[in-house]
Picture 1 (cartoon, rainbow, N blue to C red):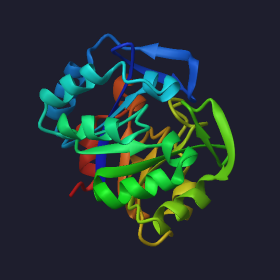
Picture 2: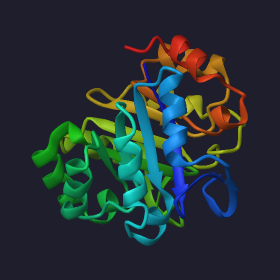
Picture 3: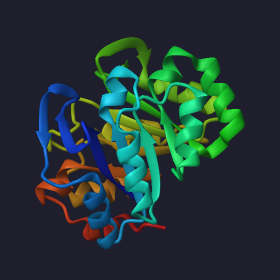
Picture 4: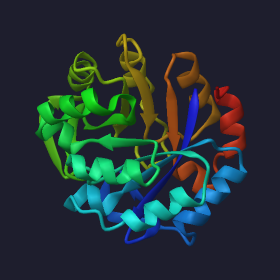
Amino acid sequence: MKVFPAIDIIGGRVVRLLRGDYGKVERYGISPEDAAREFERSGARYLHVVDLDGAKDGGLSNFDVISGVRSVTGMFVEVGGGIRDEARIDRYLTAGVGRVILGTAAVNDFPFLCDMLAKYGDRIAVGIDAKDGFVAINGWLDVTEITGIDLCRRVRDAGGRTVIYTDISRDGAMSGTNLDVYRKLSGIDGLDIVASGGVSSLDEIRELRDMGVSAVIVGKALYTGALSLSEVIAEAGEQ
């Protein structure tokens, strides 16, 4: 199982939100570039970066910061937040990002997602953020009537391979991740499931690994020191 330490960005700074609430922002006194360097020194080979400003307003105000992160590390970097047209996909990929994440765009314009999957293949991941099981979009501000599990199946049927699934109620809360939903998702043939939101113990890392989850994203637990990245990577048995 791969391990993606997370860097969430607002206004060029490293932050964490509590349960997706933009009114509950915790800011950290480390630059995104230095955070990436620290993760790489701890053994990370993969990095998850989210432009939270972009996720909310659809802009690319943190593009230069994220490009800077990519330039200072040799890690595989995936990026999400505000990527809602092909020009933005191409801009990130040209900057050296390994994979871009489509979230709101995948829900609002499913034919667009299908076209991008056909053109870019594994360089496209789909981010599915769920509140009470239903997909949330526009920086988690709007909840749809689509269930996360149904959207996972639609993505698979459209040729998508990687889904990053976040239970928003667990994200940033240090209360444990939603293991039950990942057990269900891991049973969907043909999908690589990435677990995200609330991971805070090595026991959870073991359970996710053993149920066949492809990768895990770890954020706040690393910043608070609750988890050691090197220990998480060892427990995941990263390939």
